[in-house]
Image (tube, rainbow, N blue to C red):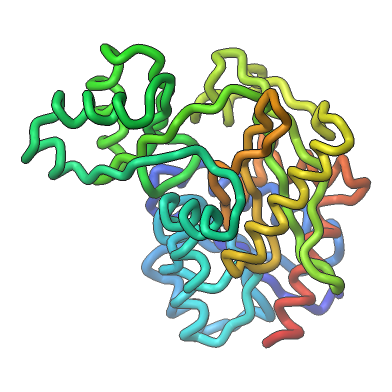
Length: 315
């Protein structure tokens, strides 16, 4: 495949720009190791002119957050007709909005913690304290507040006491205009990556996440030593099977393509609860997809080189 020329898109202008640049560098090095010719491109105002002026054989999207995952960049790539690795724009939009993804999976009978979505205007018009009191009455405690869109757990906070809610709400609204409050499920936190194969989507070994702080937030995700990982996860055989089935079901139901990562909680009774899905999983030194790939006995370059060939074949 040494004649293949690939552009890896990273960077962009989201809150996760630096993480994306790290993902792009690692993925580019891995793809070069398979013999591909790789250039790293920032997703900025020069993108369309670069695609018109020097069309690569395929693009790999290594963007996190914002336009890189909400379907915007994917729509541009579809306009140009350049093959790309990753989910198409329509499915990106479904997965990007957490309540939409949860509702679609819940309708299909999959377990997901109960949730309420509240725009910033609701707190302003009806009174923040009254809304927060109603929230606790409905969902109980503990609960977790997170922006309804976005990644890397930016703005997410677990609330165990009602007095913590106002500060958690303000922190959440710093990253978006809408808060999703979700019942917090205690259990084993896992991430399950799914990669498309010739026979359909396949779940890689689940990665168990054990953050020292108790919350897998931005610092815990990207600071070495703040989180302990187990790949494969320390689950009973039946639980490991269930989390894999959940991730594949989410991948299929949301119409995802090539690669995705589902985050889930295995409760004490063995029930697997869907939390959210990521259409462009991180590829940094502390990211979960590379750990899952390694646990499966493959290399990152091998997996993504295969996805590049699939993208080129579908045109």
